[in-house]
Structures are given as structure tokens and as C-alpha cells.
Amino acid sequence: MSEAGAEAPPGWDDAAVRSPGGHVLQSAAWAKIRQAQGWEVEFCQLGSPLPVALILWRPLLTRRRFGYVPRGPIIGDDAQVLGALERIAALARERRAVFVKVDFELDPDVAERPLHRAGFRRAEDIQPVLATLELNLEPDEDALFAGLEKDTRWSVRQAEKRGVSVREASGEDDLRAFYALYAETGRRARFITRPWDYYRRMWGAVIAAGHARIRLAERDGQPVAGALTWRCGEREVYQTAATNDAGRSAYSAYALLWRCIIEARKGGARRFDFGGIPVDVSRKDDPMYGPYQFKKGFGGVPRRFVGAYDAVSHEGLYKIYSRLGPQYQSALRLLDRLRR
Image (cartoon, rainbow, N blue to C red; front, side):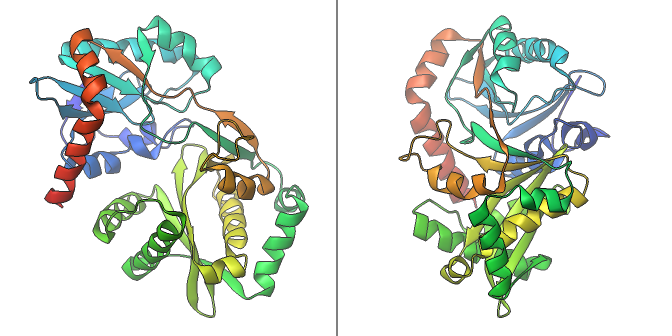
């Protein structure tokens, strides 16, 4: 069963986001965000209550289209993986799509064989995170703090000594303060940031839906660092973080991340996901290597994701898209910016 349009069927987020393997990118709020950016959305109930898949559709110049299942489908248990993939491959044929891409956060040893059996092939990744660290939150707070590396414990304490406090953000002023920190971090780290209105809508939507929260670290009454976390099923995900120069000198990022961890535990999360790390942690030239050095001080066990796979329905058009896809996606992003 599937439903097209911006309105999710009843109970959608309970299955797609709040079930143990759920993800914010499969939420009704994310569907509305993407629909406003020109995607057609389809809510696919592949089982009861799981698996489910939010499919985002884009037209191609050939009067066909392609689909994308961001961080999905959402599976109830390993036995459901193959059936969900076979149904998505069938949908690709029924909708006359050139292909449908999936990139769920499952380990390769769970997902690779079903993907191949269902006819999917390894494809270009959209999401940048293929590996992460996950921290078990079952131990008590004292045990978690004792598990930090020595230098990390020192840095958390040092932030408090230097007058850093952490609070939960509320309202648009705090959202704008977080954006200012993020934009400054982007300039310093030389990554591309989008305009304020884009993040105001995106962050605001997932926060209003109860799927995310922002915390700000302050010193002398001024925001010096911020972190956005997502609640994805039984995980709390460290999704976006930013720090200015004053925050860096006061070790504010350490106090902020530690606070995110303990609040996740208090909120019932079973695991804390630190976000992206290098697939090969020995690669010092990887852009994620610096953040990895920071994150690993808090503990956690490395975890790999299987990556993106495509169910191809039209081989010839797929080959053309594979050659011209980057230019096509650039054109779509330009149209999105002009539309905004």
C-alpha cells in the first residue's frame, strides 16, 4: 500500500522514525521539506507496521523519473530486508522509474546479500556518512564519564572551569544563533553552507515534529558552540555541530557533546551515534579524520553502513543518467535556489 502527497498516513512516524531502526529522513516532516523543494513524495507501507519506505521522486527529461529512499527502507528485523527490497524493485518497474536508490543504515553483513538477491547494484552515495561510532548508553553516567579518554575528561572539566554552560535552545533567536555559529564554522572549515532561510525551515520542521533538538553552549552570556541532535529510533544522532573561536579556546564542544550524551541517556536512547567518521580511520587525509579524533575520545564502537544501492528498471537510460547525473543534479539544485 502506498500514498502519494504530503500527508502521511496515520501512525507513519511511529513506524518510520520512532521504531528501533527508524530515521528522521523517513519522517512526515522530512517529506514536507523535500516536497517544498520540488520532490514528489510517496509513503509506502510495505508491511504492518513495518517495513515502510518514504520514496522521493524526481522527473527526468525522458518523461520517466527516479526515486530515492533516504536512509530507508525502515526494517523491523533482518528477516524483512529481502521482502522490502523486492517490493521497492517492483515499485520501480510499476512507476516506470529509471531506478530507485536505497541507502538504509544497515551493516553490510546484514544487507549485502539481500540487496544482491533483489537485483540492486552498488551505486553512488548521496549521504556522506558510511561509518560512525556508537556508544552504548546502558551504563550509568559515572561509568560513561569514566569511559572517556583522559584528555577528553580533562577537556570537559576545563570547559566548566572556563565558565561554559549548556542549555537547550528555544525559539527563532536561538535558531539564528546556531546558524551564525554554523556559518562561521563553514567559513573556517571551508565547507559550503546554505542561506539562513533554508536551515530555518529544515531545522524548524524537524524540531517542531519532535525529532530533533538544538543545544547551545554559552560563555559570558554569548553562544560559542551549538549542536543539533536527531532522535532516530533507539539512537540519538549527533547530526550537526558548530563552534566559534571563543568556544574553541574554552573547550565548549567537549562540554556540549558530553551534555548531549547524558541527555540522550536520560531521554531513553539506548545508543549515541556520533555521526560521520572515516571508513578507514588511518586515513589522515580524510575530511572526517579531524572530527573523528575529537569524537573517539568519548568512546563508542565503530560501525559501517552498507551504502547506496540502485534498483535499475531501464538499463539504457540508467547508463545515460550515470554519465550525465552530476550535471542534472547541479541543475536541479540551481532551480531549488532560484525557487527559494
